[in-house]
Image (cartoon, rainbow, N blue to C red):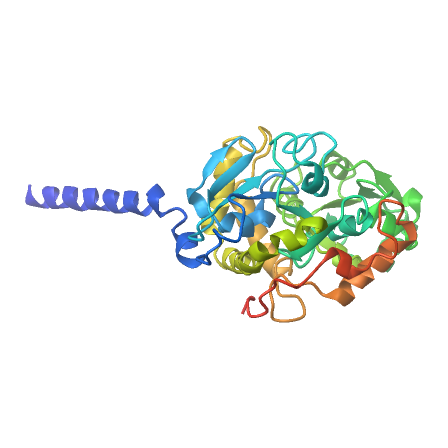
Length: 387
């Protein structure tokens, strides 16, 4: 009897311990302890940030500032930004999903997000779009949460064991007649860059929109557009493929954009400068903290998407998010770049991207636009980085 009673007590204590470990009160504790810069006098409350897509691992650093203790509602996540004295409000993106049908993150900085009924203070803007729309919707990136784009081309590892490492390899593949390259479009950004660099247009099939059918039906002989943080895991573990794939990233193709830059409307840069002086170093630190220990935030993103708060069809498994965090670190998607600082911009690299875009910039772009027109290191803390 005594032994059974003792076991019962131990079992009860174990259950209590497990319950305490998972108690909701612990959610967000890391943010409250580590993000303490006073912002109440310098920043709007809440600071509103517009995502470029639905929540995924690429957005981990932003969610890190709140942690798992915020409030989920349709299309938004809000909670205290650590112990700074203000809230952060994160709006989901996607045309016709989190944004209006014709809206983009950079247009929202000026015209607002009609779905949310808000004009964000910050938005995630790809650097190539910042150049392209530098006159129509001028935006200035203040911190690069990602050092490289996760976007690129993938292939079946067994079909092409030697892989592809450059645009020259892609041109050779096109000449071989073994298959086509499936892209969303060749009319803009990196698709147009590939055509301008000698990839025959008849080697490309346009229309990719996240589907798996073309790759599967062609038995992995085609190269496919995708993200290493998404399709890299999904095709290896599902999508009616279940075999390893490998990637050639945009940076490997000579298209070195900073994706999803945390950006402000350029005409509000000085207005928001007092806020950005304190907020940008916190964003740098949050990205470092997230990529080192992504567990709490990955669980948050999983629960947010599983609950249908982004879109009913948008689900991100815990396994996918863990794989995305790991590959972001191993492939340099998140990293310091050539120096020891997280989140700063390399102006020479930005000039290379601009040179890729210049041949087809039009009236939407500022005449003689320069890298300094679309990015700034003014608020960066050079001491913050991955070590």
